[in-house]
Image (cartoon, rainbow, N blue to C red; front, side, top):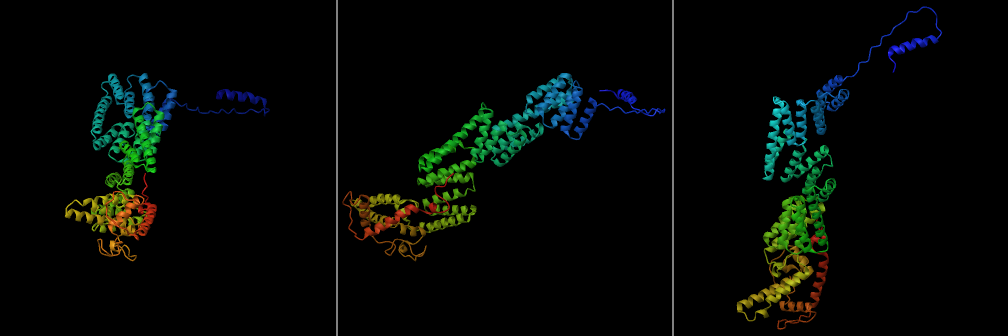
Length: 563
């Protein structure tokens, strides 16, 4: 490119080609100031000003310009390293400090800033090595000596932290983590992940999960250790599918990571067992479902929300087996893990009611009241109030003679269970079985045999059973205008039942069971021509009851509802 003087000379030479007046003219000379050249010093000063104004990204750009102009100046590298340090670009800090030390082994700032970057990355042992090297080059440098002591103190605190965690002292661990965050910086990955894990151990699940959301923005969604602890948070929240997806991503990134693979396999097995239990339940294979869900409970010990669902499921299956005491224990655990689990209160209330007895029925009423308090849906609340009313009727009835208790069945017993219980009890107390006993024992057998027959006569008749369950007094069961609690109690000779001779009832029952014949003759009884039609009527209604069942099969809460 031609200089300004050359251009001027060329301009005057070219002007000879133009025709102009030949008069003498005064020559005009122009002077243009030279453009100042940008120097390394200029860019360094500009970078310093930007750094002071906390515009660290722009400062990095200015220092880079200075380095391009003067690549052998160690001070420029340490200045840029300081700006990188402020933007948490720790790998770049280390690279710049290494270059500065290569240019000047006595550059103390390079040792200090490299050590700071290593400390922020959690590589304390390496930071100490760097500071030792800086100390060797300048033993009198107070900043290096001080930083060495600080690193040693941090190492001691880290060892103390591991001790707290190992002993389960998570509250103390969190206090120490706050101190270490000041030592190592709030962006320190290792300390932040330990904080998440401590919060999880303290059941502060939501707080732990929110912290992983923040870390996702700083560490990125691909950090495998963050994926691991985030999966643990999701598992604790009961979001097993989401947790599994996180671990799938982590395993793909690092298939050799033992801790991640172990957790991945555990959750995969949990999902498989849960599916096995669900499918078995749908097939009414209660025992198989219980076994599968028990395995799930053992695998899900770190997930309170999921444990609540699993205990609820197992309790539901146990109730299907009429194991109501076991069901109550399981569903109580579900409530322990989730105190606002509406369906668990309903399930437990149903089992308490089935167990019967004033104490259990009162507990059922309390559970229904709690469910009503938690439920928001108006239709569901109405159904729950019906459940509560039924339990209140059962409570009044439990203080008198209980037909279910006489036969030794629960209040949710099926027709076949009632028949089986009656046969067993009638055979046990039939007077012909006690002819060789004393008078007092004979009288007891006759009384019990009669009572058993009267209980069966009502409970085997769907219409009377339904009215009895509503709280109609026994002597008023045939009165269509009777209301719950409207009459006296006990078995009387009124219209409550047909007054069928218990021996006739038993004979008719056995004939039904044996297809018209009786085994084991010698038991008393007589014909009752009119009873057969009555019994047929009761059987018809019993069939109808089997289709429609109790509230749990009709209302807003399905007995088969499970997670």
